[in-house]
Image (cartoon, rainbow, N blue to C red):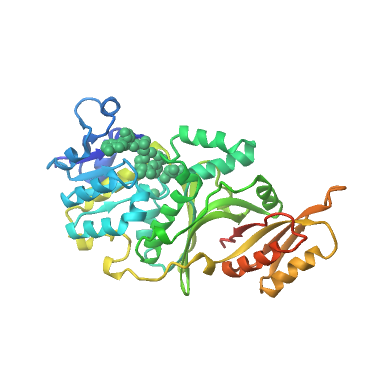
Length: 436
Ligand SMILES: NC(=O)c1ccc[n+]([C@@H]2O[C@H](COP(=O)([O-])OP(=O)(O)OC[C@H]3O[C@@H](n4cnc5c(N)ncnc54)[C@H](O)[C@@H]3O)[C@@H](O)[C@H]2O)c1
Ligand SMILES: N[C@@H](CCO)C(=O)O
Ligand code: NA
């Protein structure tokens, strides 16, 4: 059988990895897919560089629309990124009856409902394994491997750049800016790195996982998003002393009254495997009612690791494109007319345990004033760490770990504690998850 022809839009970090791996492993991939898979046309604004990567025999153009217009091409890979031209080209490819593979989590988390509906209408597949945790087959695991389960929660280190920054800052004492530059040089960071450090990229991925895990539409606008830019080294150290590591986690959790969807720095027990995921590595924990807790670990970014996922999708499509569309695995794991309207809970209704750091005057009665406020709010204390104050300093840090409480209740208690004359600086509060 003739190889299936693929058009590639954008041949940067992931695009070049995809081209190279597909070429290098073409025979192995053909034996698996039952048919050869070839990138025969590439569009990139930087035509010169694209030509250097693909060599002779592959058509290179600047305009993605020429790829979409090519009737020989069955599958279009979108690796441009962003919401603008990428959205237009993906929708045009679908309208032209092409299957689409994309690594663009930003696009799907925000415009997924529109894109999946268009794909359904046309009977084409939109595959996005590379969009979440890069090379780790987490979409496959959630959508197919765990399909027996009522999934209770998903929690993951799903941004390599921030995990790399947190690891390097802790281990080598390097500055934030230095490590960020290195992550950019290594090809982990987004075109706009604020998406990484402010938690937006992780929230895009968590949004996609929440949809697949719980059978709800993608709703990035409902996600609670916090990054690592306000995190201070002193809290990383105190957390360590209490047996915790701080990781930027993307969390999607099923509750009786809705779904929690949030990204924030999180204290995780140091003994958990996920707490020991270092550098740009990613890891996702999924808890299903039947299977219990499972863990998926690997490279979530970089040229060839991400290409690995893009090509897995190409193989899937090559195997399935002749199947009746209704018999394929649904885009969001649940049949499209079975998606639920379960609400995404506002952050005030989210339940977590907390780490609090209070800078207080070193005098009698301070701790009891604080603990009284917590007790009156029905927030129970798990542990307290009080630093000895240095001679003549007259102030000290009190660190409190609480049991799980509602965030709205904690915020009200924090406001009361902050108002105490003996609390000398803004209170630091971080969320804590046991992930048991
Ligand atoms: N880099 C990673 O590790 C990684 C991992 C997972 C997902 N992703 C996602 O993959 C996508 C691509 O990321 P990347 O790191 O390869 O980006 P990149 O910037 O390295 O590559 C993008 C390419 O698209 C080209 N391009 C830009 N505008 C274009 C246009 N209008 N028409 C044609 N070509 C155009 C650029 O010239 C560039 O070669 C993004 O959605 C990103 O979020 C990246
Ligand atoms: N910027 C992303 C790329 C992978 O999606 C990261 O650092 O994980
Ligand atoms: Na993946």
